[in-house]
Amino acid sequence: MDNDTAKAPVQETANEARQGPPGRPVLKILIGGLLLAIVAWGAAELYGRSTDNTPKAENSTTAAPATPATNEPTVNTPAQTNPTPQTGSGGDQQPAKPNGTQ
Image 1 (cartoon, rainbow, N blue to C red):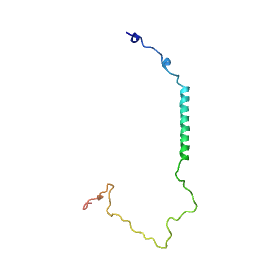
Image 2: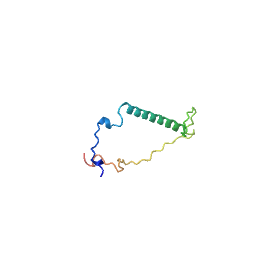
Image 3: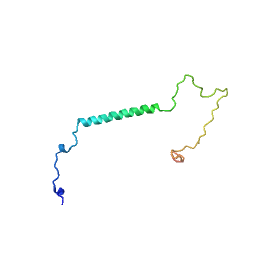
Image 4: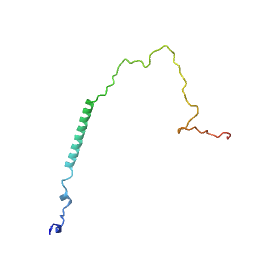
């Protein structure tokens, strides 16, 4: 039989068990990673703008008229609406007071 199972577990302090000391080295790595992410984002933005194919709006001083000029008078027609008041649910609106009461 092996005597490996009979050995006592290794006792280490918290400082001995750490892989590396906390503090400035960790902060440097975090800041470096953040800076690299910002640089990569900026590069992606520049590349995206250089490959953008959407047409750009041009500002011109001469604008085309919105409607053609005619000598005919304009006729306003009444709107086609339902005279029955409706509620938000689509049904008829209930009167405020029942008929015959004050």
